[in-house]
Length: 183
Image 1 (tube, rainbow, N blue to C red):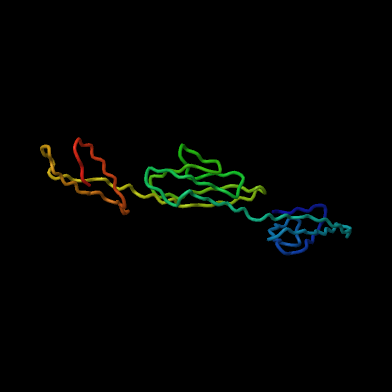
Image 2 (image 1 turned 30 degrees about the vertical axis):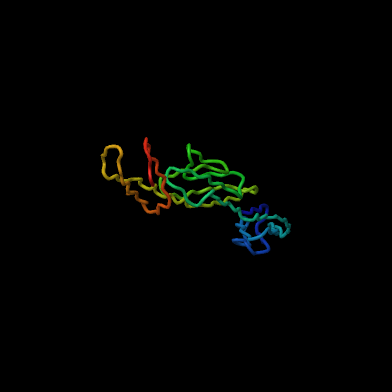
């Protein structure tokens, strides 16, 4: 923040901590904590006057993103919720093009990093990101031997499904028959 004094020929600021210079009319103040600065100005007649200014330093904003789960399967959606601010701007957009709000629905086609940026109640801005991992769907496939048979038929079904980078840990078979079925 730039401080500005006027009406004198020379200036002296104190304390020097957090100031870019102490002997100019408009130093830059960048204190790490709330600080009061005193400026003494001397005019051409040698008269001195002082003034004070309080520079308030707010704590840093702390934006966070919480997903309802750290990963999803392709074609699923998830809620991403931001906290720590009073409003948020999201990138990339959520479902239906939503770019604002504390929560968005996300359904990316691939692993994607989402960003939320927003100010807190003091106007301090922060951002956070979360990477949403997207898993490919398994490829369901099977074979039947023999491929054609007369009733009553004794058929053998073989699972040929592929995990596509994951492990298949459950199967659900549905066979529409008029007769019996042994799994």
